[in-house]
Length: 254
Image (cartoon, rainbow, N blue to C red; front, side, top):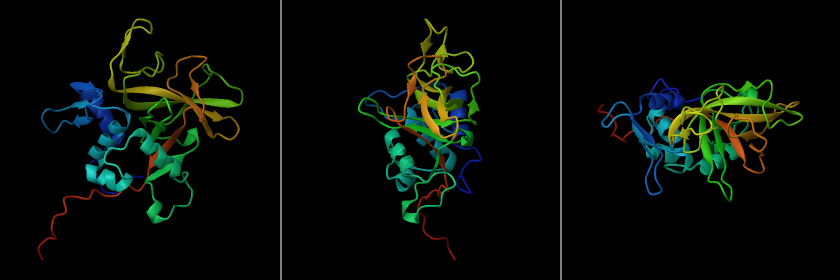
């Protein structure tokens, strides 16, 4: 549930997809470079250098009319990293749970079942000792994979999740579940870093439907599964987003 009067009729995923469709320059920033996105309403238009968390943040700003000040007011950071979003999702109530006290509102609701996933949700992987984390935007509902693809585990179900993100690591090579940044055959092809569309896979308990681990892609493999303890993740939905702060203009004349 977003704010009632956003600056755009399109949500953050719509703007992210628009950027991919129209971008004339689309890559990931270098070590000392900042993320940025120029949309089709300025010059230069449809150019950007992004990565996981900032791609989400900048797309959300475009959809909501937010500035860095708004983002900082909501999540205490102008440009949150993936692990920062992850910590907020960990603190967020489960979808349908009683709301927290007003001072503890995170503006996320946590999704715990694959059947509840929908367009606009985000999947955030937390940081570990060897990984910085990552953020993807979900572009549609999860669909069960039948027959299952390796790795297969007894007592689980698998779901494919369509996503849009910005990364330099392809989400596998699978003709049925492609990464738009991959060119050529699986052996000998290459990945173009930047924003694109792809698919990930989540596992659920076959009895409770509760989310378990995930794989980065839907490519068949024996070793691609990440358990929640190995590389934790959360799926969240934006909730009651505040209106943009505006420019602090003085009150209108009487």
